[in-house]
Image (tube, rainbow, N blue to C red):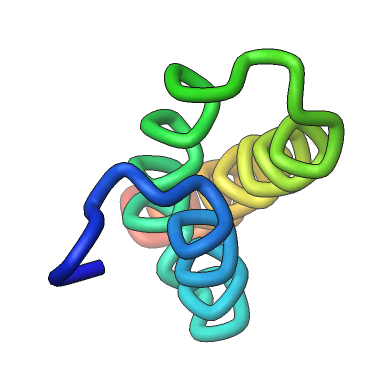
Length: 71
């Protein structure tokens, strides 16, 4: 990434690693850049959809947790 910050494969791999660490927002940022560089890349699209789903799941969990705290 230091040599070529526009490398789609490197962005994809880093996003996968971040997803493994449950850093969904950071993974989404890398995948957004990768999609801008290669909008027809199917693997990047699949991973992006997966990350978006995980972000939604995380928000739902937080919503439930906060509703229990304030009820």
